[in-house]
Image 1 (tube, rainbow, N blue to C red):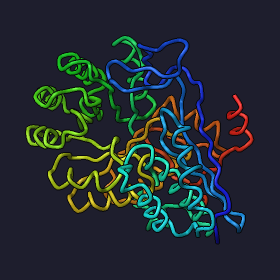
Image 2: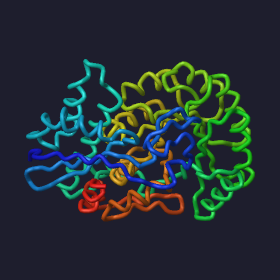
Image 3: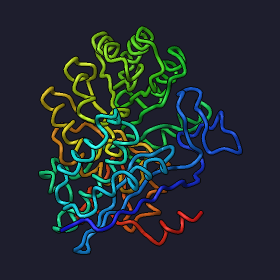
Image 4: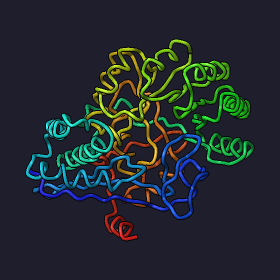
Length: 385
């Protein structure tokens, strides 16, 4: 079996409301804007990169890179740099191919960011292709399922007022969900106040998490964490700058609650020092940024440190979500998975078989590969918009 063709599909899908429901700083004439509370570039669109890899036996696989901004950049890397080295390769040599592609730009310093995003899209497509070629779901190829139902938390309560946010949270609880993550970072006092209000409304048994989006200094993160501990918050995500490993160590040692990190990292090399130094209690690699192969290696490494994995999953669409579900099923140290209510319905419009997340659980599909298939006619029509 040999790879015969690779096609890239950078997508920009207009969706309202904007991701996480806050468009402050949005210029009406531009797609990109900086979210002032998070300091990062966001898009008015849902953006992603899909990749299709075909083999000479007629089989094919779909991959996706989490590309919330600039998916055409990742697509260019796949098309110009990676494709020439992929054509003619045996797609079953997944680990060999990952290392070959990673090595190709390693000495030039491109061992993260867009380069690894591009490798990720290829990696996911190869797992999908392999599963389809042998008639087995990806989780079987990864060693089997530790779980067939994947527990999920609702990520974000995108409403403007506090009363509206509480009401939406109560609606999710009524629909059978038992966990919500609040996207905060508005200041120690404000964050603690919002969390307290949610705790009172949802009850002591409801699982609450906080994402601080790297907003705080180490002392302020510790101050916030101590207030959140009193409220029974399950974990504090991204409390300070992702580069500050020693700062995260200090926060972890100061707090009894779990500290979660990882969405900005892509390889086991970046997670290694954080594990050795105990700079996190919970890791959140994103399969759309690290791929199935590398995320499994990160999870295996974390298992040796008794650290659990709660995969990050934001604006990745159907293929990325499906890949994350198979990986989540196959690792023993899985904790919980993110669910994006505003993203999944858009993803399902591209899929022939929709992905379901109901009453706090995703369902794991048994179809070969990732268990999903892209509606190519619809995809190509969206590409022309």
